[in-house]
Image (tube, rainbow, N blue to C red; front, side, top):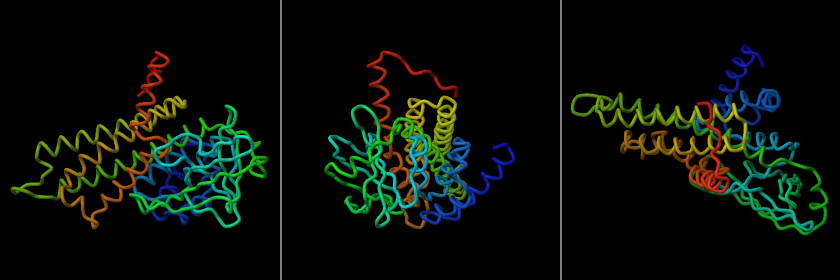
Length: 321
């Protein structure tokens, strides 16, 4: 896309993400040709959508599209891509002796009679199994963020059609890296809105005859949050420039940590108002806690990177921040 096309497409995606959520947003993205744009310009398509999803705390099934496209597999109509459970980042399934073991989640409920696409580890490589929906136990997860519904998938299938279907190769590491970059964008968008909510409250809330934005403690909290948000954005940009799995892990870790810093300071600035259902802050807090756990949390990714450094005795190349 040239600059004019990119700007026009970005405005269309921003409008769709603001007006729709869930299946309605998926339909709007299909109408815009977002999946085709993802194949043509992954950085622009991913950034436009997930940044704006974060800003309004809306949800879609686009993360599965990003992971599947980067992993080199096609997810057709009536199919759902399995993703790792929150708190995990390993392959969703295992194929051994023709037997598929599946412990995963999906971003939407599988259609009756449809199939679940599972990336499995098999003899040191990645392969794809397509499992009938009827052979999988499906349960809706009611977690901390009820607006972002996840479906838990469990199955232990004997050898047979599922095993024979697992001949299609896949690249889980590339899919995982793409998903982490997308979630880093979304976490940055969430952080930006939480900072704005806190800033607006600080300007309008009056104590001792003046807005609390004039108090040094409040200003320090907002300043530290701003630095954290900008650090997350720089890490995501660096991950796109580098496009390696390590830089994607770093971007997701930095964005998750920055979002938690934002939560802590924004909650302090909002005080009791931030605990109410009437104020929108709690929606962003809930979504942040969920997304930080998807495809590896900021804490677990930091530990993994540290273990890798100790094992290889080499520092990763610095990103051009």
